[in-house]
Image (cartoon, rainbow, N blue to C red; front, side):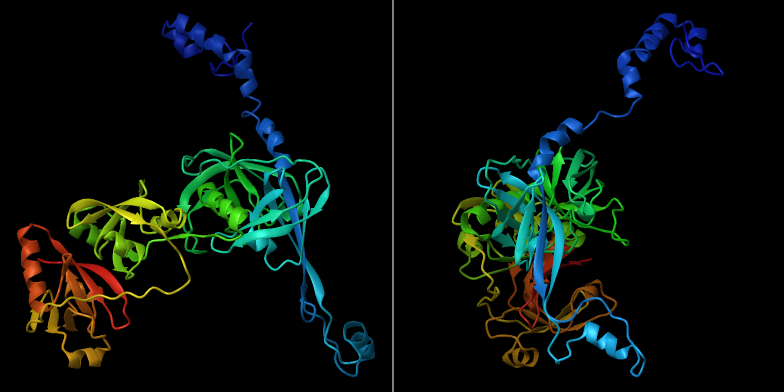
Length: 494
């Protein structure tokens, strides 16, 4: 028996159009497949994620904190005019009659976390969930509660590591690779939104490498799996049950999910967790360079793709890069056998590199690729100071590319505030109609032109002529200002 719908449409059986074309055998196969039990099952919806959720939910915990806040109540209180019949009762209820300051009050917050070591009771969460807390309580999926202590925290990645003392080993989960997960892959978030523990939401990876300006190592995964207040610190799983991210932030004008949530990638979190567990602090690698993006103009001048690599603007003397042979003007293309896909990716690669490890660093220098061996240092909070200079004599004043250039004399150093060690061609004036006007200003010093040191204006002129002969349409200049700041700019030479 066949079931038909109006206007020749078939729920099961042979489509009318195929019968009329005489493709009866093909139609019979199609009809048989359409009526199989598996096809009927698909009409009930997509495959359930319940088996994955059931395996993971016990490893996800709710975190509640409390801390004392100094001063008066945070909520605004109603005001009662003096002289009203209830004024003295209002004062007696809300104020201290002996003139003492209002007592401290306890406030609490809620968040999420997940267990990464069930035997030792190690839990990962966001730093902002537990920041400033005097008491931290972990609520397990079975309803039991454990007090937690902070093993360590990292404000730059917003990750904190907690420890509880379980009576028996707890269910734990493992980190997966956030590098291999793709935009469009399914992910699952489990957490404690609005205090509703054990909530499961599913979505996809919407984007990768998001920079939301929250810190120097921003590299967020974006997901449309519902993330709300209280989900912070909870895990984002792939469909293999591995943690690929830590849910951290949302964009929401209303405070609720609008489908734009962000998770710190597992590849960033895992080494932080390992160091917090081992050292109770994060020890990051350090290269000793100041870098900038490779813009379209600079890429054209260097003959490389735009936004590939990180351009070295300055080098810390006696730092790891300086000792390894890196030079200002180099473009770092690979670090420790990983591609540097943008300026922002280099600090992340260096930060997670083991300290004192010798790593290969590929640089592009004057059109040639070189591999240097550099020993990674340890990052400190000290400011890096960049010095530059050479001993070539200065030349006379000249005008090129809409720039009026002069030799950098002692009088001009004093006028513009440059140290004696700075060598180059001083920019006296800039033609506002020239292409260079957008990136160079009077008082700047050109210290390199086309990756060659500049002692005076004539060096800039010679480099322009050489670039023109090479058929390139633009040239890269390294510019220093009176504050010691270095930057690279690209200017047309035609």
